[in-house]
Image (cartoon, rainbow, N blue to C red; front, top):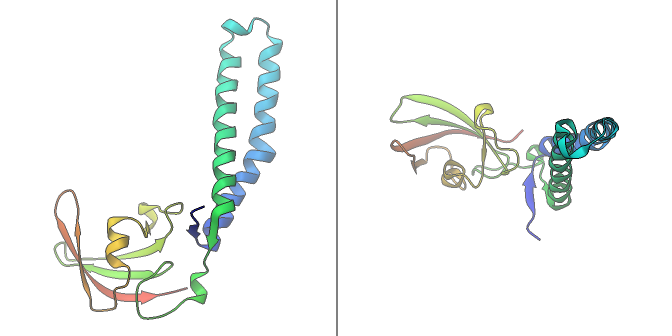
Length: 157
């Protein structure tokens, strides 16, 4: 059973989604199915088929979340530290080619959200940054070009 690294915030977010599915979405879907059944002939009842399809999606997501939460290895970045980049690090980098600074927060694959600056430790950039120290330069092969980042700051909070 492979453990899934996760921050406390990521764990709570998945837990909240599971609770919402169990307490709100599933009961609502059951009511929708009952109402659609009441309309008669199920073979040509689009509402019924849509509700059953939604039920399938809800149940699948519930099982997926239960699995992920059971395998979660919650790691609190605030309790970590050190001079090297690791899971939970907030890393400020300088893109040498684009003359831009970026801040990445290294998280597990389940929490990755590039728009929020959260990158997976298993992504190409995440893998390249792991183990680096301030002043180190990393090269990442991107689709358009090779990106070179210089590590400017590392913090855990």
